Length: 260
Ligand SMILES: Nc1ncnc2c1ncn2[C@@H]1O[C@H](COP(=O)(O)OP(=O)(O)OP(=O)(O)O)[C@@H](O)[C@H]1O
Ligand SMILES: [Mg+2]
Image (cartoon, rainbow, N blue to C red; front, side, top):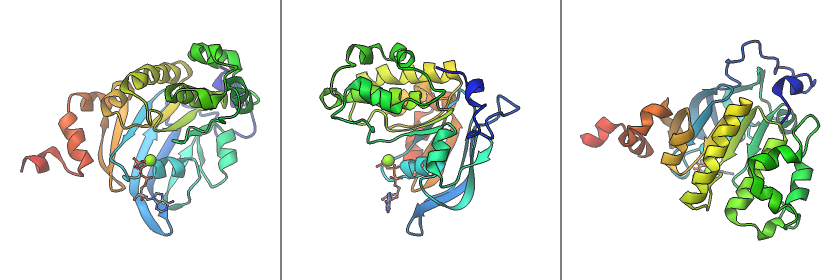
């Protein structure tokens, strides 16, 4: 995969020459965002540094997808700001993507009629890594490169979705339910690879995930959303031993609330 220093020289990434390499590359500040003037997420703040994984958790309808869509500029903000790689995120989603802010949608985004290698070739970007680089992360995809994607298993399709996203050379990667429809075993295989990729390339990741323990196992920090509000925000290490707090937050409550 090409280095971030290499990609920061492109004019499309004006803010990517961040002087402080440990400064957040994604900053979400007090955003309220929704549909038809009705907020679905209210007052959410979060920040992610290079190499960090933030797990975005919460029950169905909590506002996780809405948050990711707002972060890539696909939804207009009612208030608040999103800053990525030093520049505000606006509604020009293609430009945001070129700057290195990449979304892996929960629909996987693979072309079923095309082969694995054609899907990957379509996703390649100037200055981005080549196919061999992503095959190193997902050797199984190399063995399947001639197969039509419609014939892949769910887990293999998710591998392909992640591989396609990596070809865009992201610095901020937002992933919506990578494990949708996958067995815990398949998720156990996929998430540690994501951890290694984030470490190796100092990629900031926001991971929406239903498998709470698996997500907390690889994340640095976690936010639990409930009805569009942050019910809990803490280092993942703390929450690994406080599942009671996470579960309470899923109900929009604190542990003390549940005890009373
Ligand atoms: N296009 C839309 N128009 C109107 N309301 C929407 C739209 N998309 C989502 N919503 C509403 O916004 C709220 C948040 O939805 P969102 O999809 O962000 O939740 P989620 O946490 O991703 O849920 P899930 O776990 O089911 O994917 C929900 O009440 C949902 O019904
Ligand atoms: Mg969703």
